[in-house]
Amino acid sequence: MKLYDVTDLAIRNLRESIFRNSLTTIGISVGVASLVAMLSLGIGLQQLASRRLEKSGLFDTVVATSRRDLRNFREQREEGPPPAESRSLDEAARQQIAHIPGVVEAYPDIRFVTDLRFDGKPHLTMVAGIPFSAKNNNDAFDGMQGSFFSSDASPEVIVQRSFAEELLAITPKPGSDNTSIAELAKPLLGKELTMRYAERTSSPSLGQNDSAAYSVVSRQQVLKIVGLTDLDPDSMRGMARARVFLPLKLAQNLHVMPSNLRDASASDSPSYTSLSVRVTNPNQVPAVEDAIKKLGFNAFSIVDATRSMRQFFAVLDGFLAIFGSLALAVASIGIVNTLVMAILERRREIGIMKALGASDADVRGLFFAEAGAMGLVGGAVGVTLGWAIGRLINFGTNIYLERQHFPSAQIWSVPLWLVLGAIAFSIVVSLISGLYPASRAARLDPVQALRYE
Image 1 (cartoon, rainbow, N blue to C red):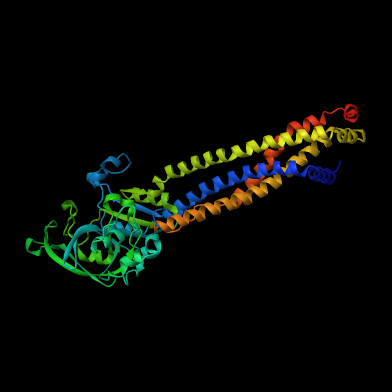
Image 2 (tube, rainbow, N blue to C red; image 1 turned 45 degrees about the vertical axis):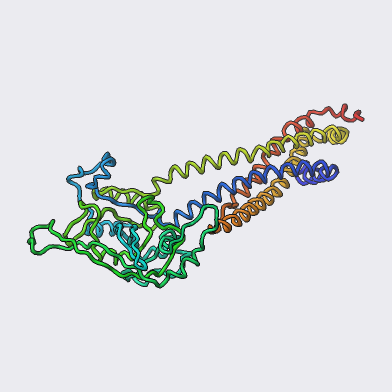
């Protein structure tokens, strides 16, 4: 029997018991829909986390620190010189790291606690310098109110939401709607902050040979508020995160006295606590890490920390696939039941086919074709239904996020491989379910089948 004849006969048989076959196909569709909906949510959440991390500039950034740093003694198991003989992370080292292949820029991490005065009231907070490139490499500044710095050394600042609320003496109440970022920006944009800080300067009176000679001078700098951001570009730093940001070049030119005296130096070539090294592509992070370590420094990247996150999402996707497949397993029982009932109803038809010369393989192929057709149609409908469910969940989630004053997010994704894989999985499950009915139909004795009433 030709493939065309088997297909045509299978479709005709499915049409004869259309109600029962439709119910079986709907069962397959529900199983595939649950599988697609669950996996699309798992994939969407993983992509959301990856996009946020990539947009934050963390995936393509390596943090370099000196082995001299006492806080890194626990990391000294790596190969390299002892801490006392290690290089200092100074300007010469920064230039050398910046010329490593694949490195876009290497800039120092400058942050300090200082006093900022607004309307005559003091506010003690953490201030950090950020490079001009952060405008395009950090999603925290995408939806900000106001504007980014006009230049890399302009006396301007961008404040974070929590500090803006402190300046305006606004205390958020739990369970109530917070003041919108636009309302916070109106009374602050264009206003001035006066920063009081201690400047570290060299002391020529102590002699040029005394490299540790320096003096501390009290200074103040007037800064203009040009932007207000809702997201926190420093959120990964925990307790050390800043709430006020100024241009990195300006922060360097201020020569602020560090709070830790071991970081203080009057040398013309300053040493840094750490460097942020941005690379061209996240795939180049391991190579850049190795190059930095060979120079005698410690190196760390968020890629190392996200291995556990990727493992978590892999396990999550596995569990979602298992639970989503349970409904499809239940639907496979319906396929077995439908085809077994079809054998009982079509015993005479099977007997006539065998009497006319149809082989066991032809009969078996006919039932396989019917099972595969139900799997194909059920899989296609199930993918569409799963896509609709995922979109509905995403729509409802965004409504909730909007009411909580959070930005909207795409928490579901249905890639092409998921569509094709779900349909193929549905067909395979249907064919496996048709094994027993097809074998049973092929084993029918044509004489006994023709006598059946």
